[in-house]
Length: 153
Image 1 (cartoon, rainbow, N blue to C red):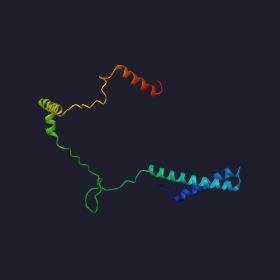
Image 2: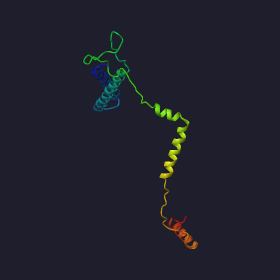
Image 3: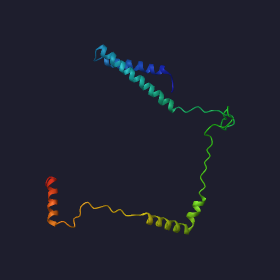
Image 4: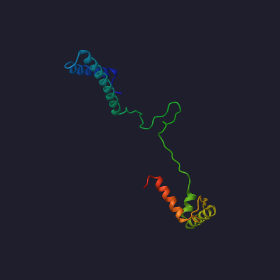
């Protein structure tokens, strides 16, 4: 943050004076003091927020290292952590070669189809009520009865 708490207190005093002077014209002194105190608190918090923003906008100080390279850690003698990034990708050359072969796709697809055909069993749920043996008039009565219960739609 930029500055000290003294900056906040100066802003709070300025806020108190301005708010008190505007409030005293139309209010009682106690009411004006209360509103001045609230104004001082608001101005104090605004100054605090202003200091935070100024501190965030200020660039960080640059470290001087003489040679222009990264500074070494005095305890371990190693470079600073995070200075280098080593990435290693897994070796997938065999899988890539398999994908490039034209016979591999056919062989793999046929194997997957055989596995799916052998593993698949259709679901045959039991029927709760069979409508084949019922009289059409009884079915019509059942439908009428159900539509009457729904409010006569």
